[in-house]
Amino acid sequence: MNAAEQRELAVSTFNRVWELLDLPERTPEEIDEMTHAAHVSCYVWSKIGGPANVARGEWQCARVYAILGRAEPALWHAQRCLELTEAGGDGFEDWDLPGAHQALAHAHVAAGNLNEARAWAALAREELEGVEDPEDREVIARQVEELGLEP
Image (tube, rainbow, N blue to C red):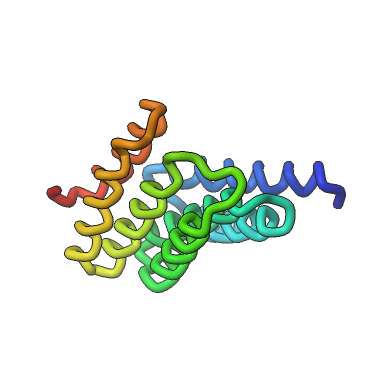
């Protein structure tokens, strides 16, 4: 597989995961597809992308597991996303850090750690002030609000 084909695989699997995340309900087959596609995308980005691509892949894995209520892998991938984001490097944008904190909030909700979730959600909200693009701000703010945690 050449570099262009690898990139297409990483992008298409990432986008497919988003489609599946957006479904109101998923079949067992769709859950399997969503889980595997998130890992494929993250893996391929780890081979051909930069640190930001890998961090976003970890974010997506965390999101999938949090949505499925699988706390341990959600927490692991969310923490990995945060570590990569804090380490920095090429390709990061101003919304990546609040996004990583939002992922940890979701993962802690899945684990039933509501105080931890509130703390990560509050941190994500605070950092949204530094996000220039209103659409980027809105996406992460909406994801934090989905948690239903009071500030």
